[in-house]
Length: 221
Length: 148
Image 1 (spheres, each protein chain N blue to C red):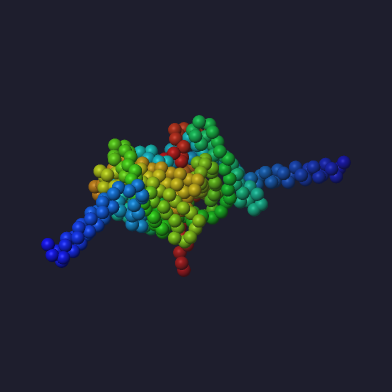
Image 2: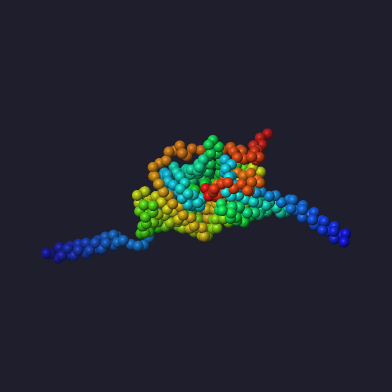
């Protein structure tokens, strides 16, 4: 073996050992949180249906649907459709409707934290929720305008539901909310469920006795 | 003696006059179809200017409990209240402890709207409905208005 061959063999051995060490380091399971992209994790679930319990609305097994930017919640004899972008809400009862410039409370937290900075970190923790094996992710929201507010969100992301959060805990100061989602389907709901009148006309409703009627706006002369 | 009687009479007249100026709204919450919940509000509108509101959230747990509430009268856009416009009684309710609840009671249109704090994420509409003043004893419902 000549001196060149010896040097080549030695160099090959060093490179092989180095690459082996690097591979071992990459494959090592670490307990450190893994930082994810800075997008609100709820933005990705554009189409689903489920039953929601808890949240700021204190709902009990209420049917909830999402299709794109619209979210619907069912009530006994009515339903409410909220636009998660414009934050308008339409409450529809039969052929009557009412419009608000804010969403229904049951849309929280899907309708919240749009203008917040997002910091996501996956954990190594796993937990079973309602029969779903879940990975746990922590998310911190801070307002982009510098308000002294820190919102901590913990999500239990079901592995068999493409990471859909079957439980979401939110902690904002002294306020703590927990929402659980059961009977989750990632199939796109019927678009017809989200229909609502373009404009709701205020007026007396059934059950209102002796109430004043809303006067129409004066005509311009 | 006559002067004292005159003063007492004047005090009595002014007291009666002041109490007469207080408006009382006492009702059970109803849904938009007129069905009663188990709870309601008793509100006193008073003061000079007459914009102070104090009162109670009655039978708030459907089992006889009540909570002290208070607020002010002021104008709120129709986009933030159920089927009404103009002046409302804005009533803060500590019933949910760490979460802010605000009732908007429109005494002209006999409607109410419940709002809840999103803890910095904005306010949310919880529920809304109607009322008939003077029906505070009507507690037929089995659930509270905030119970959804």
